[in-house]
Amino acid sequence: MHAFVTTALLIILLPFVHIQPAAADEIEDAVQAYSRADYSAAINLARPLAEAGDSDAQYLMGMASLDGNGVSQSMVEAYMWFEMVVHYGNMRVEKLEQELLSLEGQLADAVLDRDDVASQLELNQVAEANERAYAWRPGKAP
Image 1 (cartoon, helix red, strand yellow):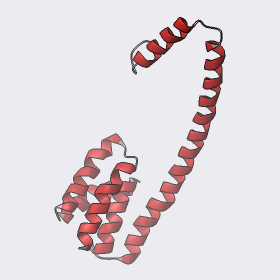
Image 2 (spheres, helix red, strand yellow; image 1 turned 30 degrees about the vertical axis):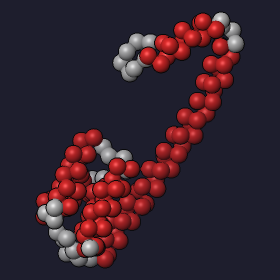
Image 3 (cartoon, rainbow, N blue to C red; image 1 turned 45 degrees about the vertical axis):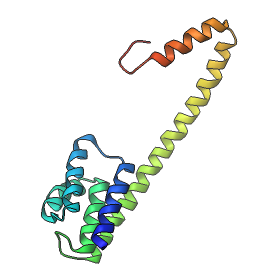
């Protein structure tokens, strides 16, 4: 039952954690292996990622250590892996919060500047600008 809960938690929580694209396939493979109870494969895939700082892999290693799946059961190891996720995850959250605050300020400035420019345009010009803005996609000239 605990293994089922572990697998379910991994499947539910992993989409909410940032994953580097190169490691994404590997950690997904590790989670799938873990859910199939192929613990040896899961550990072989997850350990190098965990040691490189991948929080998803660290979490998987923590669960494996807690349950003794593919590694020796060790509460100390489980705690270590979970602590790494929490500690370094908090550092990432703090950095993201700083980036969001910066973006929030930039967005507020852009809204004020946009509204100032809009007050100097005719309605059809605002409509044209909106149409062009909404049609834009990355890599496409506006």
